Amino acid sequence: MAGISISLISGSEGILGRSTGAVDQNDEATATEKIEMKITYFNITSYGENTRKANLQELAEGMFRDKEIEYVKIKEQKVASLETIDVTGESSIFVKLKEYPYEFEINENLHLASVDGVKVENSDSEQIEELKNQVATLEEENENLKAQIEELKNKKSTVKKIYLGQFNSTVANKVNVSAYEDYQNFTIENFVIGNAKIFNIRQIILENKFDWILNSANYNSSTGILTTTTSADANGNWNMYIIFDLYLIDGEIKT
Image (tube, rainbow, N blue to C red; front, top):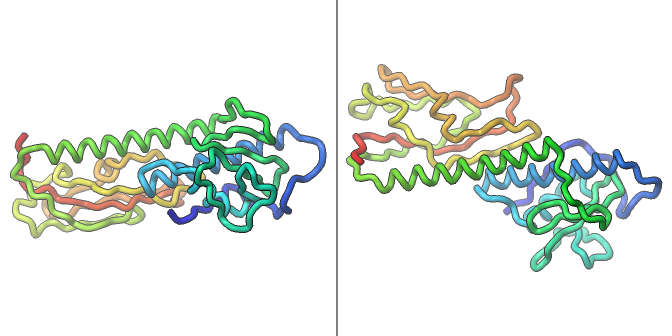
């Protein structure tokens, strides 16, 4: 998997190693939350691209490319490598932000395990917990989508599944199916989404439902044109987009 750079807030330049001075609990809490959010965003992005959570190697590569990260290393490394490390056989990695003096250990389950060697019991903030819940929601939706596809495969039918093309949710797609017989009697139920993938997730995460694409679409039976809507927040900023395949179900499904 190609490395993914996740930069939530622009960080200052730093040098390898820790800075000196008194420990500020507020700084430690802020730094901890940044690391937690990076882990969570990376997981969401990985799930959108690969329909699964990231692994420790992928996280290490993503952190290595993050401009806010000073170094990524494994337990026995005395000096941080200038190249991406191989974490095969390792149970955790150690990461330091340029802006803060703390070293964070992230375990193989992609959970924050310790800060400067002190075990972390539960560092989840309310915002991070919400993002993790969204990861779980994506997992559930993907499983539901797989179940629906499998159910369709198992039905006895006279249906023809016709591939209409690949589309992007950043535009209002207009798909003309008037060339197909009986298009005047088609409804939204005649269209099926497949291979839906979420890309370009940023700080604001929209509530994503794969079936939202068709639920918000409009089919004009007079013209035979299906129009999908775009996805943006209230200010019109793109926070994510969905690439998806669209199929026409032509015929009556008999269960």
